[in-house]
Amino acid sequence: MVVDAGHGGYDPGGILGLRTDPNEKTVTLAVARRLARILRSQGLRVVMTRNGDVFVPLGQRTAPTYYFRGHAVFVSIHFNAALRPSARGIETYYYRPDSLGLAMRVHRAILAATRAEDRYVHWRGFFVVRRSAVPAILCECGFLTNPDESRLADRADYQQRLAGAIAAGIIAQRREGNPYGIQEPVIVSPAPPVYRPLRHRRAVSRHYGRSRQGYYHHRAHRQTKTRRTGHRHRH
Ligand code: ZN
Image (cartoon, rainbow, N blue to C red; front, side):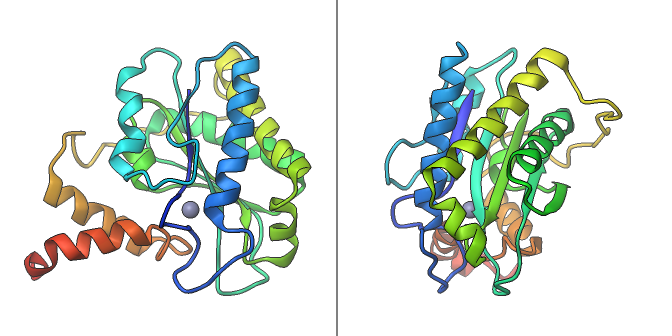
């Protein structure tokens, strides 16, 4: 299992210029640590992409998936942000066709455990789910810009409930396969998973640009991109 706590270090997460209390990077790590502990207690091998307040480049987050085969999965923990404080609820993302069942199981488990609003499962090419070599999902575990959900996200018991639900979804998926009624869609991958520095940076920013809540989400990565390739931007 690869457990990925979103953001970290100089990348606090959330929306540019909008501070949340707690920071996204803090609560993603708290939930990721709890998730790792639960999965290990079930006898699973767990690699965490970060276990402290450090910045980890996106490519380094998916790297461990290339060493795993068989039943490994990649789970990225995030919290949402929106300019509208009333925005609330849980969203789950997947990209690889073999990850929809896992996304559905984990999404339903989180909803059942938290009774949060259902913002559905979405197919979207966030870097970490797109570049994973194993089934991969990204969980947006509530809005830190919503007063109720941000208060909950800061509570240890709520973090434990989220982690427990995600773990239950992963374990049920391993044991039982796809939930009833879920057929994996056939999605023709737009590009083979090879590393092409310039093209892949453009693709990443295009995907983030399209995302509703995720537009400013991976600020640190976007800045890196602009700095390094700014003069090449005309095409
Ligand atoms: Zn995030």
